[in-house]
Each structure stands twice: as C-alpha cells, then as structure tokens.
Length: 240
Ligand SMILES: Nc1ncnc2c1ncn2[C@@H]1O[C@H](COP(=O)(O)OP(=O)(O)O)[C@@H](O)[C@H]1O
Ligand SMILES: [Mg+2]
Image (cartoon, rainbow, N blue to C red; front, side):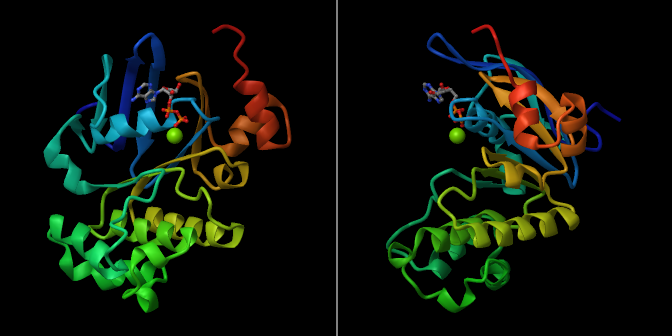
C-alpha cells in the first residue's frame, strides 16, 4: 500500500510561481478513482496551471503530484491520461475522423475511432474538415480525441466554454457516463450549473484551494441554499 492507493490524483502542497506570481500557492487535493472532481474558480485562479501540473507539463517549484500511482512528470503515464485543453486543439485542415484517428494512432487505439466519434455524436460528420465545423462541434471532436484511448484519468479544462446550454448538458451526461465506467475526471469550470454535477468540488482562488466537498457539503458549510452563494462565502479572501 502507498498513499496514492485508491486515488487517481494526489496533489500535495504544490507551489508554482511565474515570476513573482504564485499561480499555485500550496494546493493539496485528492481525487478518488471514478470520481468527477470539479475545480471551480474565476479566471486567473490557477485552474489551468493545476491541470497542467497533473499531466506533467508544469513542474511544481515545490510539492508533489502523483497520478495513477506515479509521481509526475512521468511520460509513461501519459498514455493513460486524456487531456482536453481550453482551446480545442485540433488540426483544422483534417477531417474529424483524421483528427480522432491521429490521436488514436499515437496511443495504438485505432480500433476505438468509430466508437469515440459515435460517443460525441459526430459519426455522421466524420468526413467534415474541422475548420468548417461550429465551435460546439469542434469541442465534441476535441473530446473524442481526448477519450479515444480510453484514459483512466480525463482532464477537462473548461470543456464547455462557447458551447450552447443543451449540448453542455449532453457533454456532462457523457462525462458522468465515463465516470460510471471507472474513468476519473478532473474538470475545471466557472459555471455553477456544471459544478453542481461534480461528485466533489474544490473552490480555488488566488492559487489556493479554499474549500472542498460535495455540493451539499459546501452549501451546508456556508449555510446557504445556492452554490454561487457558497462560493462567495467560502472563497472570500481578504489578503493578497
Ligand atoms: N505560463 C505562464 N506564465 C506567466 N504567468 C502565467 C502562466 N500561466 C499562468 N499564469 C498566471 O497564473 C495565474 C493562474 O493562471 P491559470 O492557471 O491560467 O488560471 P485559470 O485557468 O484559473 O484562469 C494567472 O495570474 C496567470 O496569468
Ligand atoms: Mg484556465
């Protein structure tokens, strides 16, 4: 047994500075296997920096990040992680199928391409060149690329920015389905109705994790009915 058993992610006292700025100021959190963990916080809170540290793209100044039992950065573990960046990262001049196929080929998962396109309901649009797709369809294509290799950990950095409300809810249904099948998910958001769908939430601001718990726990802790009020109350920071 080690401390990361049962956890997809263990972040311990992570500090990351850019120049004089503490983008992450001593963050510790744990994500259980099969859990949807939401990072909720305003722009500049440190959400993207934290997610990048989980994939090993950012190496902390101090503290440790352990993903799927391995201390990060660790190139070997990347094949078990799916990562969807804030800006849908696709080759605009390739079709949906070619994009998903490319990510699949990197991970030896060519057999899953059709399934991934069906999952995001893009199978009928598989021959469309990405540059011709709407933002919402691009987001879906990007998700297909992130999950085509059946990752054990899925990192979603504001996956629904610019996506209409209906599709947003559909995407969330898919995230929940993946989690039910055992995929651990870390998802950042600043949208409250999305945050409500996470199993657990970390409220992050100024690079600090200011409160953590289920939606019900956070509301109870703050003594309020609405998650946005809980956020305002629990994520209030006086110094900085
Ligand atoms: N590569 C970088 N160089 C300098 N500053 C950065 C860099 N990445 C992030 N920051 C700064 O760190 C802080 C946290 O950024 P970020 O993690 O992107 O927040 P969020 O995703 O919550 O909006 C911001 O003040 C941002 O300007
Ligand atoms: Mg961000």
